[in-house]
Image (cartoon, rainbow, N blue to C red; front, side):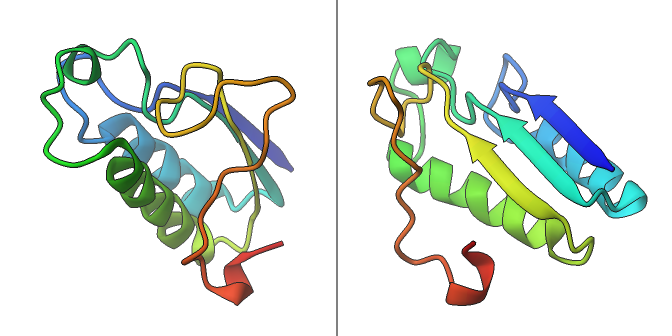
Length: 111
């Protein structure tokens, strides 16, 4: 079973990642073999990003998002595939796109 979802994973009025939390509940319930998530994870066109109203840096907010995804899918045993978007503010917008940098990611969570 493959689950595919496309961002942005935040509501237009905040960056609390509620839609992402709802998606992670579906992953935990359905336990897909592969979960492919397309960005943007933190959208460059988001109102709070454009007006510089975030409480942390772009990379800090993305790390929080990535930790939420990893912790929310760990019990499901799904293989995660994260595909960056050209509108991800925490990622270089070049083509072809390089993988997301996350050096703190535990070795058991890397594939």
